[in-house]
Image (cartoon, rainbow, N blue to C red; front, side, top):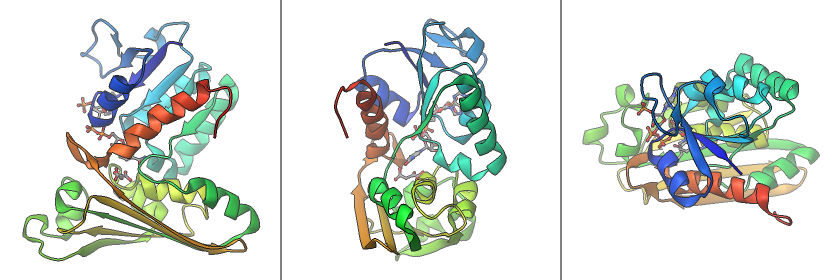
Length: 250
Ligand SMILES: NC(=O)C1=CN([C@@H]2O[C@H](COP(=O)(O)OP(=O)(O)OC[C@H]3O[C@@H](n4cnc5c(N)ncnc54)[C@H](OP(=O)(O)O)[C@@H]3O)[C@@H](O)[C@H]2O)C=CC1
Ligand SMILES: O=C([O-])CC(=O)C(=O)O
């Protein structure tokens, strides 16, 4: 199977190194070359799967056209779906093209439990994301906190998953994943914390509803070349592709 990728950063490079069959990259105009094209039109005709490892802007820019062409798309840019207009365009394009937008589980887990719990009704879902200061560099945390001088954990955001996803496009895709699986963007409460003693990128979900209650916590290791992004996010893209190919699987 021929697979294409968007993004040649920390996640994209990991995915490429761990998957066979990635033969073409969708890149910014001016960066074309062998195996690199700058438009959806220029993608090979036999391509059936694209992997977005590039972020919100790339999903908005290329996603609708990829799906409308009948090419399935796996994305890590879940927070982009907090924009209802883009979410609608992607849904419509997928319908038109008979393709599917697959939302990679990314740096979090337990989304299956949350999605099942949603069926019975959820009363409250909260998500807390905690990273070392370096993981928040370049984000909306910077003007709120002195990241370099931080000596104790400090929350720099409290609000809905929708606000978090839109305000922190490189750091709150997990908030979007929790929202999309569970109680939705507006009913999911989010707290984002910079913590000099964080043991990694720590993500915690608390949920209760008709099913009962659960807590989930993961201490994710960041990718070596980007302290913002958990290695598990890249692994989840590879796992999503492998799952598609498996005759039996979970
Ligand atoms: N779901 C989840 O749990 C997680 C999701 N993410 C999402 O994944 C994204 C990528 O993470 P990561 O790999 O660590 O980030 P990097 O900054 O290391 O890499 C991003 C790559 O995408 C490319 N890119 C960005 N926009 C475009 C575009 N419009 N067209 C073509 N290429 C583009 C960049 O190119 P250039 O160098 O030219 O800018 C770069 O190669 C994050 O921004 C975040 O939104 C990240 C972590 C967890
Ligand atoms: O990689 C992580 O730990 C989480 C992240 O950046 C995001 O949610 O966008």
